[in-house]
Amino acid sequence: MKGIAVTTPLSFLERLATLDTNTVSDALDFLGLPGATYGLRPLWDCPKVVGRASTIQLGPKGDARPTVHLISPVIDAVASDERVLVVAGGVEGISCWGDILANAAVAKKVRGTVIDGLSRDIDGSADIGYPVYGRGVTMISARNRVIQIDSGTPVQMAGVTVHEDDYVIADRCGTVFVPAARIEEVLDLGERIARRQDGMVAAVRAGRSVAEVMHDKEFEAITAPRK
Image 1: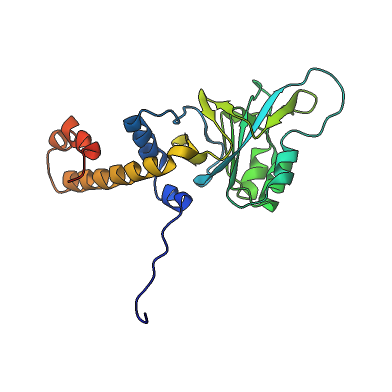
Image 2: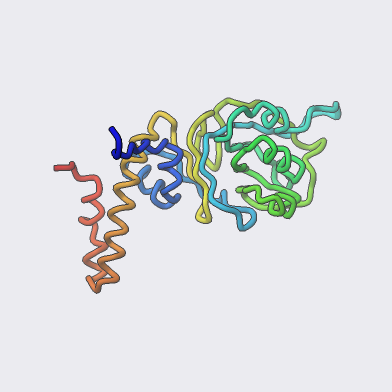
């Protein structure tokens, strides 16, 4: 009918992008789900990343035979603009990401990379605006030290099991993974938490006692059945 605006529902990724890692972590806590990590933080002053996981498992190289460079086959195979590379199995002191890979990822419209390990050439990623999250930086190359063992399979990231196509959100506070099968439940609760916390901030600014505003009963009300 003329004059009536039609609103397209937001996708799960769009809804996730309106939240932050603190809120998503709280939602997972309320639901008793793993997913929040410690130590996987931005390796330059990069923007928030929200997307679907493309999982990659690395490991130490056991012989001197030449191999395809780690991660490059996964980047070559990317076929959508919603992917985040989730790289497990980093070796202490050794890089598993660099600026050539970052340029290749940008060309394939990858949204960012999360490494349970280290990156080198971090200025190269920053110069092209490519987000990289991980444990730290190094100058030591992965060549002849680390290889790609598998991809598209479950991986361990800072103690959290991440599956292909799980949801990823990473910002200045760190990285959170959300199981794909639970994303709608997590988003529904996360949005309720965000609204509640916005109201609590407004109440404190208006002069209400912070002890009263932050009482446990206020947080319990977030998950109380709706009437």
